[in-house]
Length: 58
Image (tube, rainbow, N blue to C red):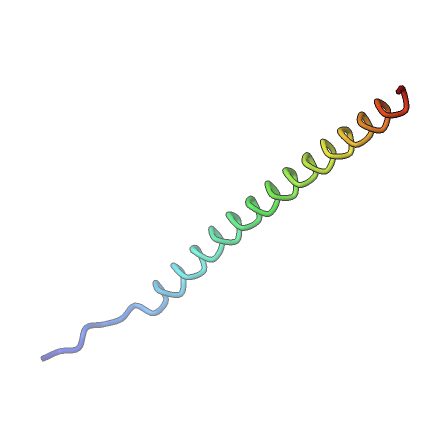
């Protein structure tokens, strides 16, 4: 029985391509997470300032 040929270059190329896609997806997730974190912090700061202003008016 003959052994099947393995195209190692094709496997390496597929690995490189998939790594590029995974890296791009990871970067997009990290950017989204950072953006959402910034929005939450900004909202928390605004809420805290509004609360302090409200307490100062009493």
